Image (cartoon, rainbow, N blue to C red; front, top):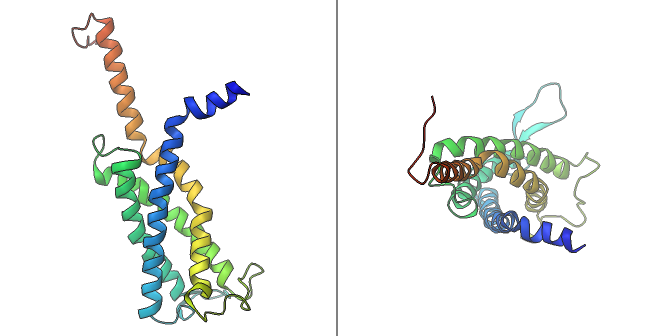
Length: 198
């Protein structure tokens, strides 16, 4: 049991620290996301209003889809910058746009899943629809859009962490491995620098 504990807590300590930081950044991103949704809902059109009618389908693109997507875009940039500079500390190793492309791609996949979850929770014909008796929009805490958005974010976040760690911010690992290889090569060559073999 002690070996398992050492393996999980000592050997993977760096991963746990990153997960905690990712969670803190994500928490701040959730607040940013929800603030944008609330502002859009307060100043915009009725969240259940139809923006685009999808032909041959009982579904429509509604304003809550638009609000959710706008909130995602703002929170995505917020989260990316904090994760880049603090969680994964990849800023010195890779360019902003080079990392943001994959981060945005991961986020867009997560947002597609989030939109599916939000739709299932807000569509009154869905078996997963939030109960109107509880979420009747009589106050901010009882507004179904806010809860649907929050539930979607919570469900999508673990996938986002894993994919971003493995793919988006992989430049940190590559830079560390390259530095480690340089150290080993220098040591093997008597400390006199790298020896190139062609």
